[in-house]
Image (cartoon, rainbow, N blue to C red):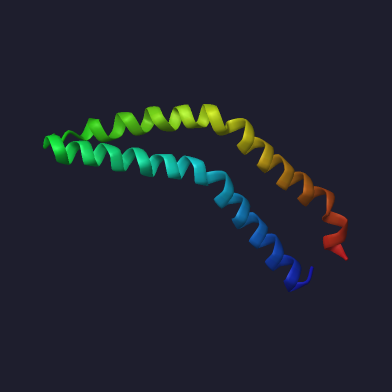
Length: 89
């Protein structure tokens, strides 16, 4: 394996990781900001008020995005395994 191949594999892995995690992290950020704004407007400082909406939103997002996420990860692994002979040379 050449350093260029290793660098390219690392780049592809990081790119795939960011692509798969972006919808969940983005939704978590949006829900967190909305709950924080609600808490600031109402002056309610309850710990469960921040936790429960995030958990429910992330569970819903996982149900919605899981097929797509599995497809992206499966295609990445398929390409990686198919190209093993090319990496050896």
